[in-house]
Image (cartoon, rainbow, N blue to C red; front, side, top):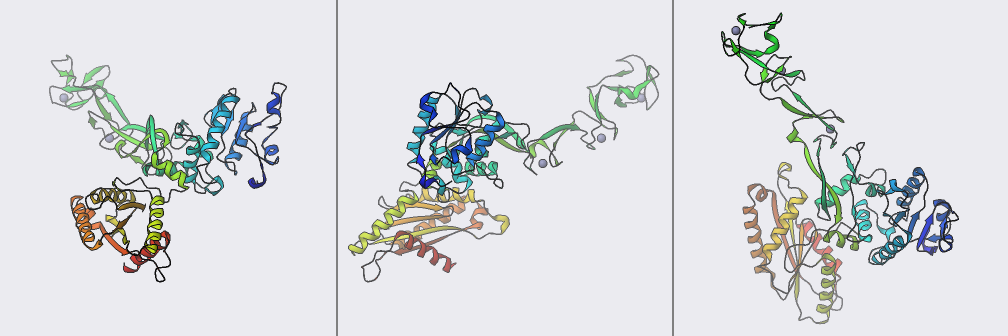
Length: 470
Ligand SMILES: [Zn+2]
Ligand SMILES: [Zn+2]
Ligand SMILES: [Zn+2]
């Protein structure tokens, strides 16, 4: 499909033409998806007429895997089983409205053909559909995790894992949960939610336990399951063989207990084992991973990431007062560099702070912990920076600062002290595992002041210098 030479159309209709189809829809109706794809038309949205389940499923899957992957797909209200998979079951008028709204939002986004990774595609898909839309979970007893996200699944290629991508986006704060639907428990071995709970003997883990009433023989003190005392219709103590006649005189009945027929021991409580039906792993219930199932919506940083066309630079905004997003930071850096080239008396520094692992693998912090630490550092830098300084984060372990008219030496040592103090407060483990690398340089025009270095050049040079040092 070559989208460049296609004629633009709004909503198009897929399915057999009947006499009930109004004149206005006839010219944009196609018998099936192949007819539409060969028509040379670039639709803005697709409306499914009543066709059998297998047919619309196939059309929908093919659309989501094509260049048209992000287009809205609607269906007639009669196609009730299409509900979890399409944008809406709705009237043609409503479908037109939604399609137009999406076409407007799409103008702020990169070309869908340029959006490659699954994570980016998921964010883009939600952005186009507006802030009220999220990926809804569907209960499906056949799926590993008991719930799946059918719309998100259609966007993935065969080798991509949707559940992993969604979990990762949620962890990074690009998606947020809304409306708790359920809480599942997943096997810590394989992640399956198909867990079977059984009670077993706490002594020998045998399955062969029974809840039985117990007898207590007053003559010898023996306590055992009632069944052990029954002898030819009467009660005899299996230990001292005394004939037990009267409750309260010869014997009494303590609380019912579990009796194990494998090890013959009794216990007040049984033990609960969680058995994974998929990988056969046995664990205790509290070893299972608890997962909250909810609708996943785009967060503010997720929207920003979708507009920027990538999750690579999308980290939650820093809590610093002087924070600007990475794109804004690069623009300001280029702008300042231009001014400096024309007015040599304007001086400014570019500074880069990088958190670095230095611990043993066992002490390694997760990327998430580092991101959090960097956030905390940024908050503390508020006290060190001036109103006119700008700070940003472009990846999970480094901060960049533009410092106009500042001699960074004094600042550098103050920042290092701040970092040391933070690491100390965070505890021994993090203090040992992390070090901060700090570098700054004065930005000056090249070739005798005639050429202003670009922002990307400056940042690349500084990154390379840091690498050389390390
Ligand atoms: Zn036992
Ligand atoms: Zn006895
Ligand atoms: Zn398992």
